[in-house]
Length: 84
Picture 1 (cartoon, rainbow, N blue to C red):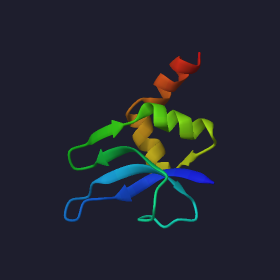
Picture 2: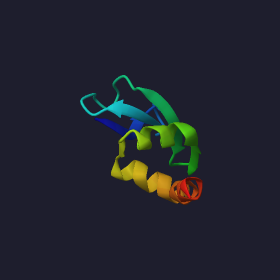
Picture 3: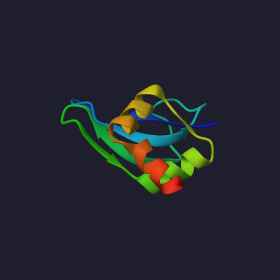
Picture 4: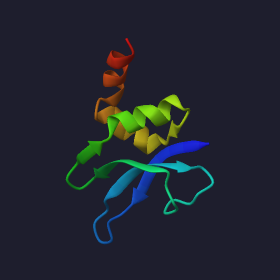
């Protein structure tokens, strides 16, 4: 099973990549694909929308934190528009 979850990149400051990764892999393990990043300090989000849609259509489950980030970025409103 594939999940969309955060992978920490910053050493001193917390910066996270949003990645599609196998559930059995550890947090810092090898990811299938990088689909965005999140900076909680500057509150910036950059998303690769086609890649996220691809993994969600294939059955990937976002973690609760990633789901909240996508919701704040109004990702699901855009998804409803493209599917309609």
